[in-house]
Every structure is written in structure tokens, then in C-alpha cells.
Length: 204
Image (tube, rainbow, N blue to C red; front, side, top):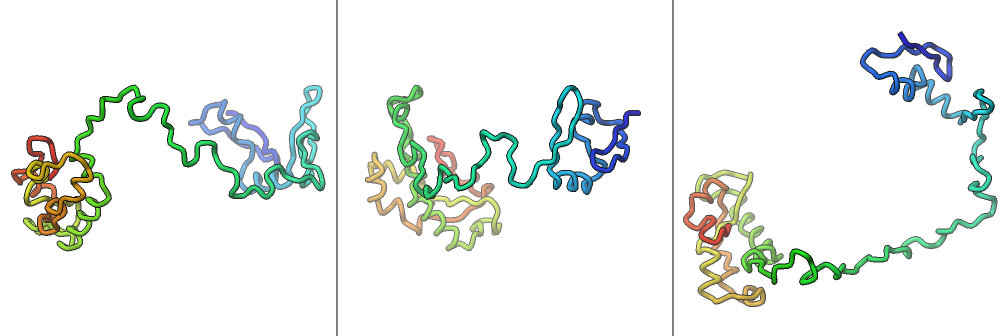
């Protein structure tokens, strides 16, 4: 059975059976939290000289090294710099490996429907459909949970019929943003529709 004295009160500390000897010797130096708090308030530092432990109490405001000790009337290096110090790349786009310079660039093959669905206008349209339908599935009546804003007329068909090839054309297309074309469905009911993941893996 391993034991050692508490650094503050001298009470014997017994090593637990489920703890390694290395961890016990390194961590457990006090018998209680109160002894640890009392000991640390005094700010005692161990200093080894000639193989013996000598106690040297450190006064409040005193530093361990005279070279790094803050001197009286010394002006801090960061005084009056609040809000002025910025990182070198703040507000800058790292263009060295972006776009065509990136190693995985594939000539801009991102699908148009994916880009349109990530527009803020599409998020506004989806939120309107949810609020109008009171966050309730119009087929099974499920309230809340994971809901989808379903296009009655499929999203991909609208893009084909209006010959939409750019985001600007999509924003100007009134049929694409018709609020009467949207309905709230839960995931189960959405999967039952004919246009769910239709041909081009589009979540309509």
C-alpha cells in the first residue's frame, strides 16, 4: 500500500487500487480540495538546491524571473490597440488555390439546380411555405419534425420549360418562385411523390 503526506497538512494519502503509480505520484498531492486551496493561496514554489527541497514563498505581484518581470511604470506593448490589430488575411479571399487553380477543379461542373437551391431566395421561399402550412404535412397531418417544401410542379421541369441556364435567369423566372406551387410534406410523404429524386437526383 503506497502512502504519502499531504503538502499542506501532512495527513497521509493512500493510493487507490485502480490508479497507476505514475499518475498517483504526479497528480494527488493534497488530501482534500480545501488543503489545495490553502496551499495555492500562499503561492509556495518548490526550488531544488543540492538535492533538497527548499520552500520559497512568492509574494503577490512577484515574478519568477527578473528578466520577464513587469517593471513599474512600464507601458504594455498592446496599449491603445483595441480594435486596431487584425489578422493579415482578414476580409481577404485566399485565391491561390481557389477556382481553376485548385487541384480538384473540374471546369465548373456544379449542377445549376444545386446552386439555385442554395440561394437565399430559395430559403425565404421554403420558410414561407412552412409558415403558411403551420409546419404541418398536408398529406398525413404530421406537425413538426423533418419537413420538406415540395414543388407541385417539379423543379427540374420548370428549369427545362423556361430554358434556365444561369442563376440570373432563375431569379427572373416567376414560375420558379410561385408560392402556390409549394406544399409542406414530411419525409415519408415526400418519398411517395413521383418527382422525389426524379432522374437527376433532385429533391423537389
